Amino acid sequence: MPNFEHLNLSVEDGVGILQLDHPEKRNALGWELHNEIIAALDLWAEDDNVSCVLFIGNEDYFCAGWRLDVLDGISSEDRRRFTDLAYKLMRAIYDYRKPTVAAVAGVAPGYGMDVSNMCDVSIASENASFGSTQVKYAMNGFYHAMLGRMGTQRARRMLFTGDPIDAQEAWRVGLIDEVVPVGTLRESALALAKQIAEMGPELAVVLKGVALRASNMDHLGALEYELTVTHDLTQRSIFRERVGRGRQRMDAGDSAAVERLRSNASG
Image (cartoon, rainbow, N blue to C red; front, side):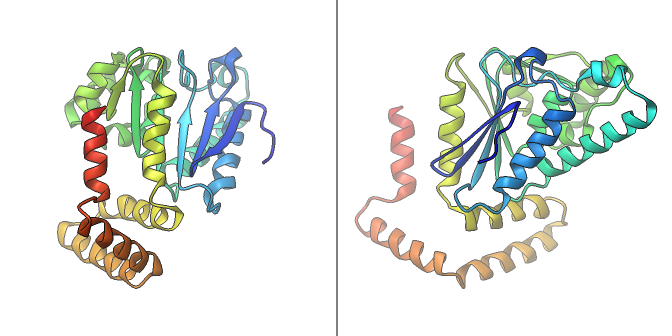
């Protein structure tokens, strides 16, 4: 695996762990970190050892947004190049061919929140805070991603005011899916990512495609598309293998779904 200056990369049980590691800038995104994240995602896109990607910072901060010192100190032409690079990163995450999980602790203002919102699922530590703070600097937040997670009024309120919200409020309005105790974020997020990765790379790519495309269709178009995907999957060897194994477990009264339910209840 290539060496990265501001990322720590590892793979564990089908999960590619992408940890932002630029403490001097609180993981704010400058030229280098933009390029490194894009390269890391490209590295895992076709890797069958990775079925899910976990984005994480540390227990004190996730990502402090864009490097404003970079934007303030470069020419207009370089600012254009920087925003073009940001678009490339946003597209790489938003349209990634495998499921992604964001694990957020501490601050996630502006573009840091946007990175979390571009992932498929986000969970946060109790000490996390989120805000579309770009308005404070005469810029715009990524409204489309906010709107995909919460209602129109709340998304516009955050876009227009830039005021931050804490983890519990972020969970209440649907910006994140789960809040976990301080100090447990990595463990909790990795457990979720591993659960997603259990499906394996082939199914991960197919289901991510469904998630990306079906939401933009009308209801009948989505039904037709998703049934076409179902038909395709039933022709694959992975279907025959897993149906056979699943039927054996159900006949024994020990289905995987029931096992997970019991595990969650006991936890």
